[in-house]
Image (cartoon, rainbow, N blue to C red; front, side):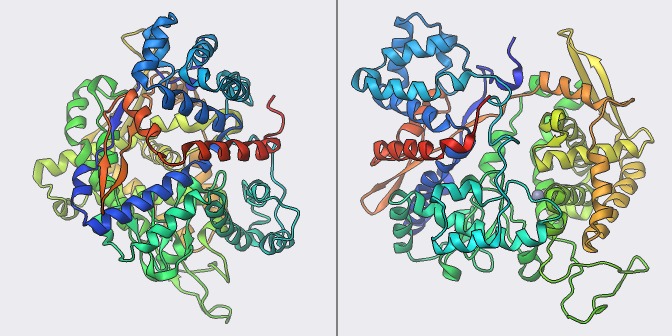
Length: 606
Ligand SMILES: [Zn+2]
């Protein structure tokens, strides 16, 4: 029996990411801007394949060739002729890969193979076996712990910047960007690291040239700066802030200021938030919520609503969306947007001394120290936790809820569902914990687990978490939240915890902050919760993440047309196949060459 953690179910949700109305509301100029920008993003996004696993580029090219030569319907017919069941064929539509032999048979029988047998055989050779492999090292994505890039030094950086070092451009991506920054080296590394991130992005731009450059030049031609509100997902900071999560170096999620064109030009974000203390501290910030993503991602069916009592489910479905709006709004604006840091602005020692909670502030940020550099590996989740706490806390305020047009009983329901959802998220978070390495893989989910622990610790019958047995006879769990205790028990507990988080953050108290936060992050099998056992239950009952079918854009005369696809596996395949209409073959060749150049970085795959 294959571990369900590595297999996607065949009934995984596939939904179109609707943006028709938003696109229609753009002016022609803005549409052109959005078009070129998204072209550049699609090209840049392919970099991810090179950082995911050694076989990823080959899988992408293999599937791309199969489906460009024969559309999903025709390939489906072929599968039938070859004796593959419907279930087995679904395998190919980006889903469960259960049978190596069957897939191989289909590749060999395909039109793409008939046209280029040698190339297809070579592609299969590079990925066929690896994509099914569940060997320890091969079932995980990204570089393993065995492959650790050497610690970067400033001379390496200078060599790199001057182009004199022993680096191949592609080498630098692995060698210079540290995967993890430890405490001891952070002060030396951070400034260098930021330079490197910058270099990496410039490198990404060069790397995809001419594909990407072409699009960037075109964006520049569409001079006018579009209204960020109208576009909904463009973000301009002090110099323009870019968070191209999909084209960053391995394991890095970051922000680059003044990427290339300085202040006249806004840069896009693919995520919904901006989290750079430096900008926030002095200039303020902006962020966006991607409504179309949320509405698809959170349309949960009742039967898939795990770990809730029957009587909570209808209420949950009814109020999930409004409560999410409230929580996200408060999280982003008043969570990440609040909480000044004590920063030494004068060289005079002691100049930053102030009183906090009646005590003199004894520690603060000095020189080039920042939140991220001080709190390094715990910084991002800690900050998410702080923002989540702010949301949870402020949603109790009726005046705040009235801004969201929620009053009386509705406001009470939203409070209850928002808190219930946080407790449930804290439990679901266990999916993102790896017991083997005692590590968390997702900052937000880690933060929600911490909040669940805080609310459990509050006691008083506020939250209960029970191990149960489901109707199917398998382990299950049940979460309950006592609505009447939210104000009396939950609020003071949260207030107390949030205060601690904030004070430790403001005063750059790394030791105190780490020990507090890491204490709550621990996952053990201790009574009464037995979180490690609950983790198994969560994995057993997890709902696979929905896949989004994204639109393409196409130039038509002087305007841009939006090409949408149906929300099905076939729609998903078509949207990929039509993504690079002009240069897909060239692009695929380029991708394979780069994969080849990088191959030695993956080391032994045993
Ligand atoms: Zn956040």
